[in-house]
Image 1 (cartoon, rainbow, N blue to C red):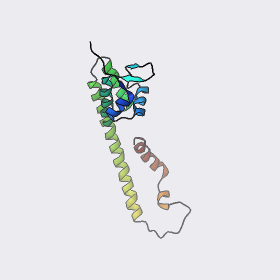
Image 2: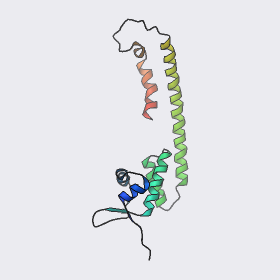
Image 3: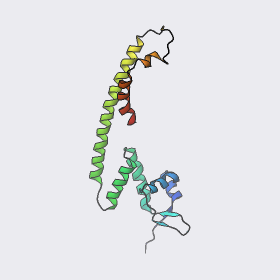
Image 4: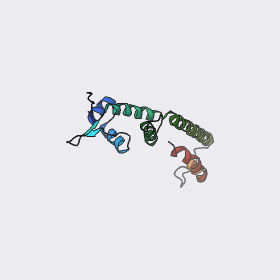
Length: 154
């Protein structure tokens, strides 16, 4: 007869370095499932929960969202290996990063052009109504188009 070791949420938190609040959040997001609830209402988790929490933290460090992690765990718990899914998600992340790098490089070039142009602008202009004449000289449509995609992804 084997006995299963069960842990309270505080024990899981101590062993994984993840806060109790975060573990509860993971449970609401269906990333963790208590093995059982005691008569006292406490949640009890099996040893596999320790592995799941470590997996979640490692997957997050690779840039996977909790939704993606949930999908990976669902595939695993259905009895399949999720490695192909993980590779597809990783390839998608790499493509997203390449696009962000490209957008940020373009934006950086624009900022460097403004720095160079504004460096040649004399500072002896009289006080004007604009908060800063340098920023006021930037076309609004161009700046919004170049800033929006970069900062939405950060």
